[in-house]
Image (cartoon, rainbow, N blue to C red; front, side):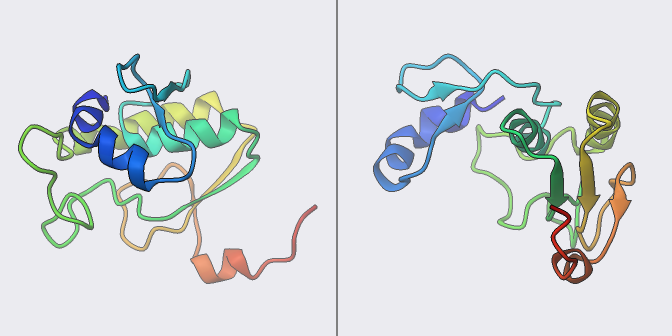
Length: 134
């Protein structure tokens, strides 16, 4: 899923990003491979990674799952050779599966405009102002 991105940006990412770098594919760049279910998109992979790392409550932001204002991404399309949400219409179905696979995890969708309707929808301000359940 992310091999072409690493081919293009691995050197820059390793030089400028101080956090943990992960990929889904074996690679020649020395980037650690994450063994997670990615649900066929990077957003699903991010949720899956959070769950694998112990998250029990996940708040989604920017999970449009549709073209918003004619754009697939907030930053515009990726350069030629990198995916630009070509299968965006299929992603909500993958999140249905993610929800079924992780039914004990609380996932709240705080995205303003979204085609993703399998998770509870709430305003971000409301969710952030709740008392800590712990």
